Amino acid sequence: MIDQEKIRKAVALLLEGIGEDPGREGLAETPDRVARMYGEIFSGMDADAAEPLAKVFAVGDSEMVLEKDIVFYSMCEHHMMPFYGKAHIAYIPDGKVLGLSKLARTVEIYARRLQLQERMTGQIADAVMEHLSPRGVMVVLEAEHMCMTMRGVKKPGSRTVSMAVRGAFEGDSGLQERFFRMLQM
Image (cartoon, rainbow, N blue to C red; front, side):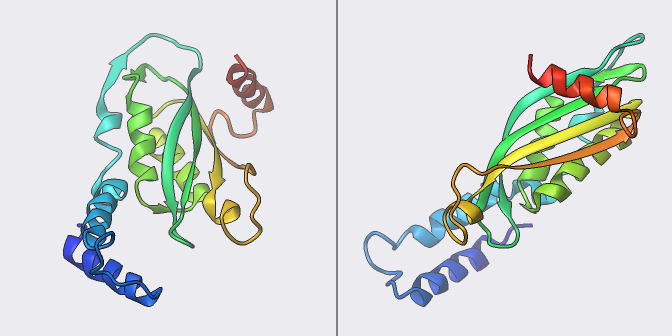
């Protein structure tokens, strides 16, 4: 549960720490705005992927399903700076498919936490495997990290790509290749 009052106090201290006056006109409401913003961008802290992944529909045999270009925004746990990009998720149904928005909702749940991209990739794959029980799942995230763009090495435009494969995708380079071909469509 997000404690708005603690966030407000922390932001006021942060402003003082960088030499600002938290009471000046432009900053007087900043602690409250940041607390509300954190309530939104960290809303995945208390959310469970089981909820969106419970909405399934029965199907006969089905081929690979790919939901691509799911835009996400998250916060890196190392510097508390944003990283953002796209998620691509494919699964091979085993008698049931998800409602179309459910993969995007699952991405949002894991993105709205202090996060590592590599962990988030695996969490999405594991949640789909656990709650949908497909024959396999493959998740690829590509993201730009502001900690590499605004500070440190200052390399805007560099992207980090992470991948998780589960079930039928593991060790099957043909399926993985098909996934990447479908991404190009």
